Image (cartoon, rainbow, N blue to C red; front, side, top):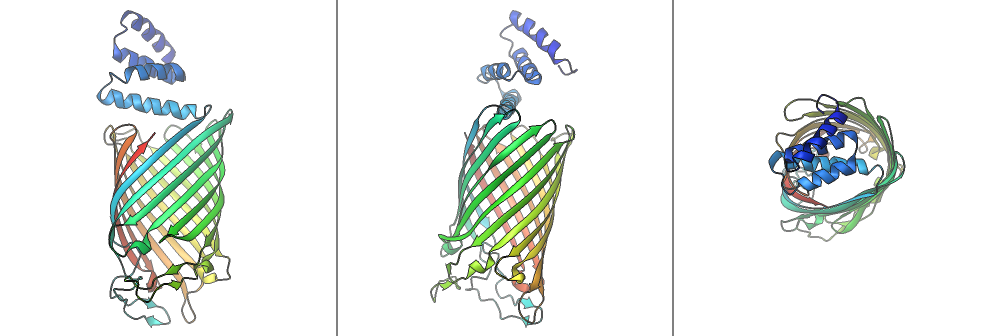
Length: 392
């Protein structure tokens, strides 16, 4: 089979196992042969019979083969997966705020008054808890053609006092149709989402998107995507001070209603090297246009990202990524000032461990650094978190 003759290998192994039916290594190689030949049901039967007695790397390999068989089956059988997720973490700047005592500079207006420690614009740090759940599935309707969909719900709660005003919830759903033809995968679909802050509706969105993925060979993959979305913001009652003195005020957030149009592209390269490295380079361009005649809230967005994923050992995964984004706004921030211009850098790393095929643990750290010519939008943020995820 390793020499590229799986049919002959399978025939030889079948004859061998008739004489030595208790040889588990031979049964594993036979199941692998069935998999290579596309005999998924026979491969599944052999792998599942080996699971109770398999150990170490062989057991891990069997689980990966079974996952690959399920992925194949999604082309012609309905599939569904559920997940539950819970985690703990720490965020050094939960509100993307300014450093305490800062005097932000606005071109044309000079320095603004010192940021009070009690202001909601001042940097606030806290530990947090996250909870999430979701379901996703596929429904094949013709050779290569399938419907897909997913629903997910996430909650972030802060554990410190008085920070409930920054707590978030989100609910989202996506769905569409995919078509697989030779080395090309096409997807088209739509999405709906709603997020809440402090228990109040904050922003909802709906949109459509399309993707094209092309597998050049076993090592190289290229993708292109396009998206349109409408963002509707809700007016909320918010506090201007962390101790909530003076009562809430009306936010008038609805003025931020906007349309977003974007395109993106990515190239992934897998290497036949130790740790199975996969390098991905992506770029994106988008236009956000305000629908309330506020050109100062409209912007052009440019971005790029590079990531490296590794498998250092069975059951282990690791990754690191670096991203850059630039936002150029279309009008003056305020009378007498100039157009806002932001530059953002991000660095993140993660380590994952699959305790079982269903249960995994993931530790991640992210660092964000945004600079802006409008000093009100300068901030740094570090986030670390550990999450447990169970899929079934």
